[in-house]
Image (cartoon, rainbow, N blue to C red; front, side, top):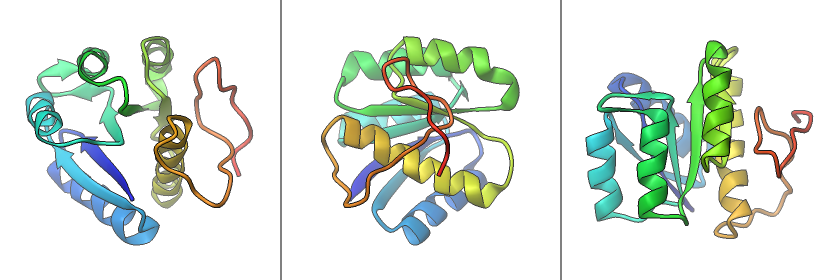
Length: 151
């Protein structure tokens, strides 16, 4: 079971995302936070395999939040989701330690599937979660994990 923290400023969107990932994907346990301060408190109280954050987080910017997370725990994977117009932020996030980025654009149901796959992949790279099937493809990958075609 992957324990994930989702950080986004829209509580309703977070709850939909949590429901989809926990019910449809079934191998996630999801906590949510609507701002950076709430996320930091949760990170102090619990251990997470992966944190998924928007590139714009109330209380801080996504890159600042990434830096704060990495200063507290190098073992927690970090995935940032961005809009189509924020690709430069994705590149900076990957340079600064993000394990993956997902462009949040297109069909919502496929986006949730892609997010779940990316979360599994980033955690697997850190050796904390093993799945029977190999995971291939990514929307944006770090330089040491080149982009491949989506499956």
